[in-house]
Length: 145
Image 1 (cartoon, helix red, strand yellow):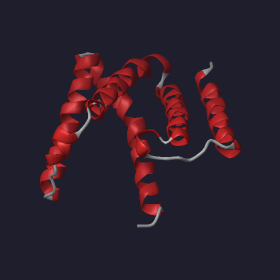
Image 2 (tube, rainbow, N blue to C red):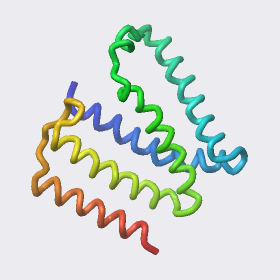
Image 3 (cartoon, rainbow, N blue to C red):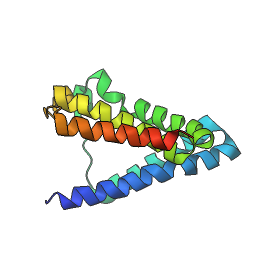
Image 4 (cartoon, rainbow, N blue to C red):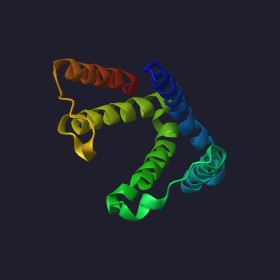
């Protein structure tokens, strides 16, 4: 598989991540913050169950071998969704995404640099550092009024 396919998928995923907080925040105006986050996860879970059923692939046998912290991804996702629902009406979608993306990139650089979770091992170099600094400057320009 060429790198083009994952890159196109991530462009689509990035657009979806930018849409999701505003959609959830609108729902929260009618239901509440935690209710909107919960509905988002229920609908997402249903979509994933349908995708699993359609794919015909299911491998849950390895769950008993998973470490406790490998189960925390859903909690982190719930925190992120709830935080964006809170932030979007107050600071806007662009500012919310700019801050989130900057934090994601900085965390990812650290994870890659130290090879946490058995992935990465890509050293933080001048080029990568400059990219992160430029992104943070861009986020600052978007956030400040």
